[in-house]
Length: 567
Image 1 (cartoon, rainbow, N blue to C red):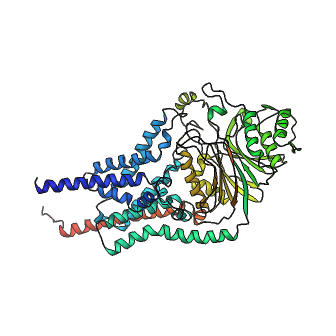
Image 2: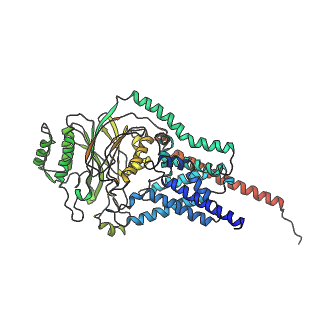
Image 3: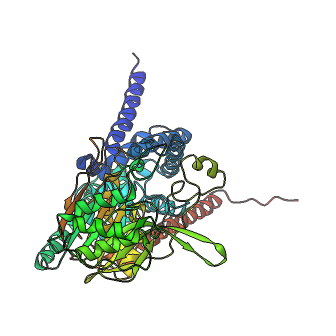
C-alpha cells in the first residue's frame, strides 16, 4: 500500500477515534452518572472533539458534525423526555427540535474554532463568551429552557460545584469552554507556559472549592444550634390516582387527605417548625366546597384524638383550604402546600394559578405564591393551534403566571418559594434571596415523566441553586426527589424516589436542616457579571479583527501603491 495512502488512513482513523472518544466522555458527564467523565469533560472533553473536527477542512462538514455530535449528547442527557406515557407522542417533535436547535448553536460556535496555532487568547475568550450568551438567551424563549448547561459538568464533585457561588452556572459554562479551548491550543503549542495555563484553569474550581468548602463548613459547625426541623411529605400518587384520567377510578379527595394525615400522625408528638407538601398536592383547587365540615372534623379527630381547635367556618361545606389550616392547627406548625387557585376579577375575568400556600397555626388568613415560570403545553397554551391537540389530554386553558417573588415567614425564618421547574432558574432564586430569604422551599410534581431520570436531574439543579444563593433548601415532591440540602449543597436526608428501578413510596422525611446561610458573589451580581464579561470579550475581539484588517489593508497599499495614469 502506498505510504501516502497509509498516512491518509491513519489520520482518518485518528479523527474518528477523537470524535468517538470525546463523545463517550461528554455524554457520560452527568453528576449522577460519572464524576470522572465530568472532570474530563470540563478539562479536555470538548477539546478532543474540536481536535478531531479540525481534521475536516470543509467548514460545512465541521458544522454538520458538530450539530450531530452535540445534538445527540443533548438528547441523551434529556432522555427523560422520552417517557411519553402522559405527554403523548408529540414529545418526540420537541426532542427533534431540541436536537436541532442545541446542535446548531454548538455548530455555529464550533465554526469559530480554528487551527490550534491560530487560536489567540482573545479569540478563546470571545468563543467562551459567545457560548455563554447562547446558553443565557435560552431563558427568554417561550418560558425559557434552563436544562443541561455545559457548566453542569463542573458539578461532578461537591468541591468543584462551589464555583457556582461566584459566577453561577453560566459562569461555569464559560469556564468549561475556556479550559477546553486552552487545552486545544496546548495540543499544538506544547510549551511549558501553555501547559501551565491549562493546568491552572483546570485546578482553580477545585482549589477555590476546597478553601470555600473548608471555611464555610467550619463556620457552619459553629452555628449548628441554629437549625430547622421539618417534615417533608412525599405523596406518591399517579395522575390517574388523583383525577379521573382515561376512565380511571382515582382515590376520592377525602381518601387522599386521609392518606396524608395517616403519614403525618406518627410525628404529632415531636415538635417541628415546618410541614411541606408537594405541588398540586390534592385536586380541585383551594376553596371548592367538596367536603362537609363535620366530616373533616371527624376525620381529623380519628388521626389526632387530642385535637380540639379546628378552624372556624361560616359554611357547612368547606374546601382544601380548611384541611390545610386544620393540619397547621393539629401540628401547631406552619404548613406549605401546593394547590390550584382561582380568582374572579372585575369584568368577569377568571384567573387560575398554580400556587403555593402558607398556613400558620390558628391563623385566619394564608399567604399565596403564584408560579411565575409556566411549562409550555402543560401549564399554558403558547399558540392557538395547540388547543385542539392539548384538549385530548384535558388541557383546555392556561394558568396565569405570577409576577413576583414572595417570602413566607416560617417561624423565625424567611423562606423563598419555588414551584417545580422554577428552581432551575438561578435568576428567579436570586430574587428570593434579594427579598430576604434565609431558606429555599421547592415543591414539585415530576410524575408526568414516570420511571425516568427527571427527579434526579431536577434535584441536581436545585442543589446548584442552594450553592449559588448560599442558602439551605427543602424539597417536597410527589414522587421524588424529596430531600433537604444545606448551603454547601450537601444532602441532609432524602426519601426513595421514582426511577427506572421502581416506583416511589409514600412517606415523610423528618430532617433537622442547618439554617447556616451566607451572601455569595452570585447573589450580589447574578448573571450580569458573566454576561458583561462575555460581551466585553466579544466586542474586544471584533475590534481586534477590525484593526487587524485595517493594518493588512494599509500594508497591502504600501506594497502595491496606486499608480497615476496619464490622460
